[in-house]
Length: 135
Image (cartoon, rainbow, N blue to C red):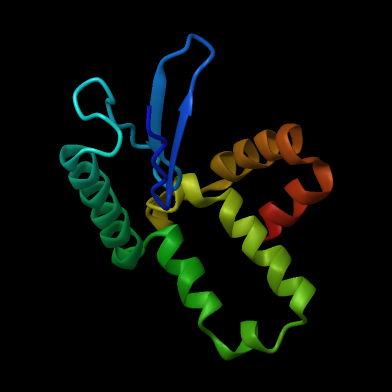
């Protein structure tokens, strides 16, 4: 059996002995029973998934959403003048808030922020949760 390596994809044998394949960045799976690893169909599916991932990455956040607000702040001169560690901490906070980046800014209210803080405190600790709340 040949072992194929495709950049950005993880191909492995699971605990049941079945071969699995998924795109690391998006988590999109390829069914290796339909398209055998290394075949033309497999490589075509890999290229399709990679193109979709690139298009999503280039699309960026929309204006009027939390993601657009964060992106706009990261592009300001004020953010560029901050210390490297402060910028890194702000980016970590933004990464934690990534699942809700499409939330409109007018929908962000005190109960939502309190809920985010509580979940963050359980997951990443109270100090980082306070940083996320402040961010």
